[in-house]
Image (cartoon, rainbow, N blue to C red):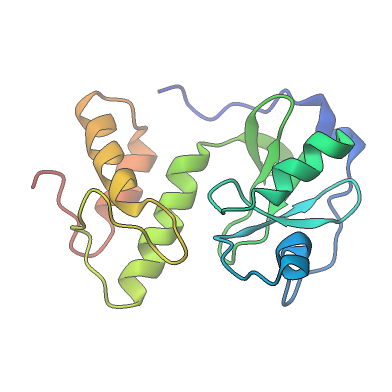
Length: 171
């Protein structure tokens, strides 16, 4: 796997990144439909629309992008700080004053695993185990083990996973 590289997404220059904290955000469309089954939320960096992620049944954030062509969203998941560009299919985070591309599945899974452990869970989970409202944590665990075996994780990623209490690479 390549080291982190400065992001080359030109859309970041066309969106707002100074939004106030979202507080008790909800998916606007799900709320209209009387639903609360979203997994996590995304905020459009062009207009501020809040919609549910693609792991949610409604996939309203992506639907908003398709309807408006607004290029980017930020995660509203506590403990996560990345943005996603639909056009460039790139996840980024601001690091040292510049936008750097990051591995979304790794980042989200690590945050969800930490939440799972904080809730009293263990690092060994079934392959079909989902965390919270639907993050595929079992798939994440299996994928991280596979990626390590195939030398697809950076040293920093391996260290972050190995630091999880109770983590074992081999089961």
